[in-house]
Image (cartoon, rainbow, N blue to C red):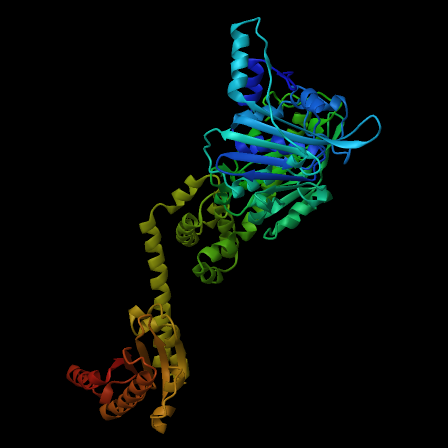
Length: 633
């Protein structure tokens, strides 16, 4: 039987350029998809299952001659024949003709079926269908024989498959990767879609090139990171589409995309972005904190950001894609290294791009710092709402320094919980510096140097003592004011307002009143209820001050004029009125399990009798009615 197909290669070529070419499935699939692009395909279908991966396209297909002279010819350079595809004039992605060997990185057996439209000598068109199978163990055995016996042929003859025209609709190529090697990653459609989307910039209707994985179309949104970007810098107006994908970005800025290097003009497209939290760049086993380089719409270098010794915190938030088609000019030398996953660092084109990106990173660092400083206060309030109240209490330069402090904290690479902790200690440290009149120390703090923060956070006992001093001093002022207005027998409204704003004057445990608070309202309005069983007097009864604690206890405060003398009988009558009304209303609202307390604030002793015996007697009378009194003098 004549051998229809033949492959010639050496053991070194197979090991270096085939089995060890790539170590991950997305990279291998990218080589196959790139071949489909070069073949003028408009659709590629990738179907994955537990034991095989099928890649089918609707490209021009291959004849038996094409298979031998192009596909099986390792090192075939298609660009020597043409630099563009015949139908859509696409610039070829492939160059050395070795990407096909990458299939053996993940599969031990590969089936190839291809269908091409042909024209015979009479001008009649027909379809030629070819199919063959390659097995890595068989190829290795052939090469081993050649190595052991110099007279042995190194030619490998793939197994011919029985195929017919119905094997493929119209034209195209179908590749089946079988007997897959042990995979370190769970092979799912979602996983493949995301990685394929990230490795190509030419997928979508804009380029008349669609890729489907298990029937689901791959789109740019499958890259799954544009929604995470808070800032984006894009190169040239043609790259604005990337900024449009970033719906959540608060800063979008166009940058120049043309530059000179040693008298040569270069042009790039693409973008560099920043996320809000460095953790957003963690994607399972992938770290997205990198700037990839795409060439002719296909991933050429995994990360150019690693080329720089960037120590700034901002770099930990970066991600980007730079399209540098000048890396693959047909008339210039091939820049790619032998493993096809990197570029020669000494090439002038690489040096030019590296310098350009470095200058952009320097600009982005300054802008990023400025933006993070501006948003620092809002981020702090978002994490700790109480900071909003604290900020409102600041005046003059204090506000300016607080803004600086929050901006620097906002630059720190930390999760939200850690930032909350930092914010709490920072406010304490700020207060310490403020009372020491040394807020200018905040200017010396660099976000990169957390040790400086730690120095300020030391001596928390001293900070706490400072704050206690502040609290005591402020409360003494409040007490002095209260003493003044009661001594002067101020209007009841003035005293009432002062007490309402400083309830700790009555009881230190009321420092932070929570839930409902009210002044001067009826029993019904206070409890947001109505009850027809109340007497008119009870309904009209007004409460001076009241609030409800978190636990649900209702506190009612009845304020008497500072110079008025209240009798025991008068107080008992009023307490009983409130007691009966509150009981009825709470019962009707199914809140009878809530406790309540009625307090009388008096400016003069009860019955004008300030003896301990009289106070004790009145307290015992009021206790069954949940009443009590608080003398201010």
